[in-house]
Length: 428
Image (cartoon, rainbow, N blue to C red; front, side, top):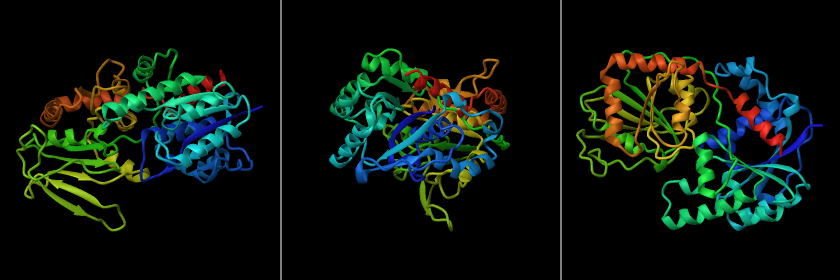
């Protein structure tokens, strides 16, 4: 008999306007935990107007064709999904609200949902939903089998005051101590969760990645790409400061992500940094496409510009990777960095900050070569130095590209991630 798995998730999980690594992880593993699609009626809605429930068996049937027709899903056509012995009857419950600090109606929706689940039910909760409301978990901590999937410790988000971080850390600690098991998305993230909250046995289950066609490099390697939400944690302000320190070198940089632009003032500036390149902002709205903001390093220098193109998905995101030479991720914090392996899956070298699970994602080629470079967090000079080396040293570009192609062959897919998670859940 297939065991039901109740998945409690943010309502934004499939919102194309706000993609995130956590949402992608949840969607990819749940699709596979459901195994082969089966006929069945949708589960009744529970939790009121702030909550919706869907049956992934029906969702998988609707999406199956588009996934398997994709040129980047080679793994899924050759590797079997989660075995029937580890498959679940996945029932999704999507909760609206501003988590981890929901309004009262959204808190009531979650409380109602948990109270309607049968005794001994297996429940997988996204950490964004679960970690800020331990008082809602506590009445059910011995009645339900609660598995919490932590994508980022709440107190590690940037922009929090000291008081806010302390408060969120305390709430998360209470919530995770109520859980039957805790899962993180990288080995460093699992150890950090243990250290923060005095836990042991946190499972590390890194994301997978879809195989994708190799990108074709350009002669000068000047096409830079950053894919990340526009938030202080992702460090686009560091990227802009580093690019301003590269006068006279040919480059273009595409930034794909939703959010607010980092502060940009003519001349291009960064706190404590004297810009050397004058900047012009140009706002464009291509027909049928999202608005684009372009930052030119002087109108006469079209070979030095940054384009903020908004959130990309599907073929548009594939095209952005295909049209890049080097992937750049200057984040201040990352539990893993799924975009790093997405770049490597296309043979793109990566320059990224040495934070969280990023070194695990970057990895090495079988011969030990690093497919790029790790730099300190929050250091525009170090990032500028790495980019300068890349742009001026053809032999270095060849070495990094060779290492990226070799690392590409060692990447594991989402089926393996789902199998590891299935084994953890089946043991509860």
